[in-house]
Image 1: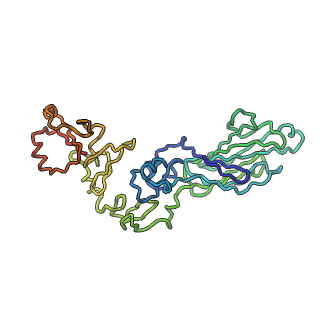
Image 2 (image 1 turned 120 degrees about the vertical axis):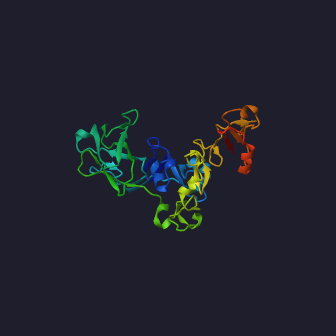
Image 3 (image 1 turned 30 degrees about the vertical axis):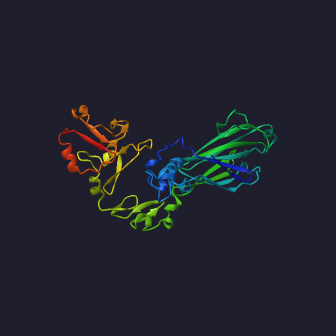
Length: 355
């Protein structure tokens, strides 16, 4: 929660991340990342080597992104009019401009005054608010009505308010989508014809680094083969890779990343980069997969002498087995012709796993 103070008036902003999905990893651009929800951040560092550039701030930092390079878009408010109340001006403030990140919420305290027009209202009147909100914006109001309720309840009116007293309402303003043009919310008090409060809402739908002036063409980080946008390379046609270092056909390279007899690229456990598999961590961030095709699973490969992906290949019980899954606990640099000669008598369904 962040509190911004304008004189004696407080505007409180917070993220309603619990209402929306927190799966940041699916976003591949800075703009869509900050739209996801209030907890998603984007790593602006071009040297970042993590698997996901859109993540929570804590996970980005733990993956190697410098803290000052983590961008998180924050809701902001600008108080434009906050004059003294009169019999024709019953609400404070009178005008506020919000910059709202999609899929987040903003809480705005509004003071409603009761200024009696006749003696009947001096002993106890009521404050009734009405809201006119445009499409894509949802507004809810809560108040304890000067402690008439033990806790704030969702309401648009308070009764039993005496002359000169105030009732504080918490306006929660939500949006789940982007919109190009600013939108305006009008709030009236006690059926007065003129709006007593105007809230102008602008959607924050892009990062400043995505604007044309911030984009670097033929950037060094992209090997001169693409544009650097928010720390990420957008490669020219014919190039791909983290730094646009790969050229030629992606489909051709992906064929080199498919294990013979399999159909999935990198066994479904990694990404193909320039014809080589880059194994991805599992959902817990562990380096679970390894091998030429990311086919060695540290959680399922046999163990020998306490070593993951290690098996005694001379074990008589294994050599007599119809189905073998052999793994070595060290990198293998042996010519395939030698392996073929050495293991020629092993079963056809023998699987050789290396780390």
